[in-house]
Image (cartoon, rainbow, N blue to C red; front, top):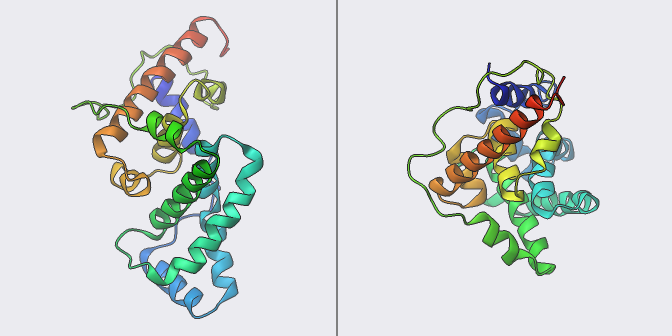
Amino acid sequence: MSLLGGALAALRGRQRDAPTEPAADDDRALVRAIIDGSQPAFAQLVQAHQRTCAHVIGRMVGDRDQVADLLQETFLAVFRQLHRFRFESSLRTWVSRVAYTTALQHLRRRRLEMQWMVAVEVPEEAGIGDEGPGPAELSEALQAGRQLGEALERLTPPQRLMVGLHYLEDFDLAEIEQVTGLARGTIKSHLYRARQILKQELTRRATAGELL
């Protein structure tokens, strides 16, 4: 396995004990129960999706102290808007979109929305982002994902968000498109550039012996 491939596999592996995503039929029953006033059902929805929402919010606002408050805002909005959900996407995609919108509103209140929009709207580049992770096989030192967190800090906030959604949360490109409202080519560009940066950083660390 390549260095970057091993790191991303380790990143996915950290989530094995996370709550599994409910099946579509279970989601329908859950939504109906919440609309009918079931508090345990709403608690179940929060438990199933709060980690993903915290990831989205944290990557966007960059302030850990704000995440808990914005999570509360997110699930309050989910509760108020759930009767409008028509299952045109998965429930997790819709809830994640609410989290994305909540974080964007927070940035707007702090007059930081334009900074995010400039960072997220990279030029689309045809044909990139489809190939697998790429650096040469240098070592197996990333089997536990060591140093990956520091390498991720070299990415822009939008790149960290796309990498997290795609590799950590297993969102496909269509789901990321629904969550963020970004064009498919823009998402591919972020993922491609993020992989190149991670490849360079992890290769540098392996060469320097930092991963041993």
